[in-house]
Length: 147
Image (cartoon, rainbow, N blue to C red):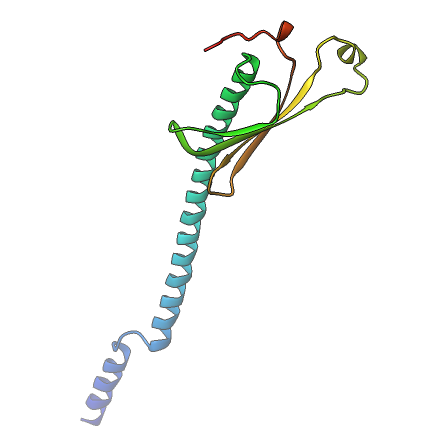
């Protein structure tokens, strides 16, 4: 009878479930995994936001360069926003005369070669996009389009 009681106690101990230490280790592993997963998700979201900004900012910069080439914007320092069409975006122009070393034939031309630094940024944010463009005023200062 004593052996039957010992067998029951041994049987109960072996099927009693998880120990507290095993549960704590499982919770710690699960927590670390979830933190890594949420961190990756957050990073992915910020990269998607940055990619969206870079796409829109490049398009808006190209639009401003086209306006300069068409004579709608003069070669001068200026700044502004993109209106209701693209709220939250602003642009700035920094224009300077460019003298290229070693390219004397360009410096000898009658029209000044301008270096235009065009920046597009978020009104409230840290993202900005900058491009540099070299150009000359149209012949005789004429404009391609006059509204």
